[in-house]
Length: 69
Image (tube, rainbow, N blue to C red; front, side):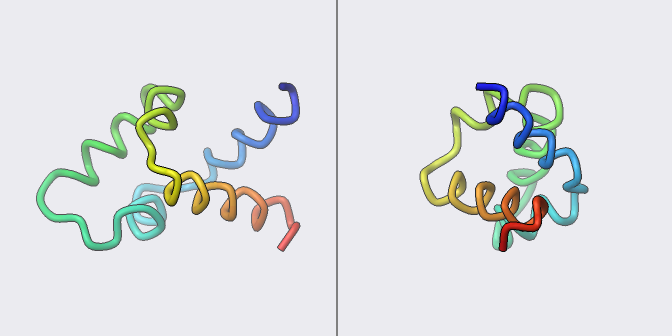
């Protein structure tokens, strides 16, 4: 569990632009903005709402940040 929580800290490196480009590159309207707000205010809730493909993108991002890829 500690490793999981430690890995999640890498997500704090994402800025809004990177977040939108990584997860919602083709979103329209306020969709990505609302997701960003949820991501910043309630990470656990945001992660629970993610599809498997979004979780995979976030996992890849974390691994890249850790220098694993």
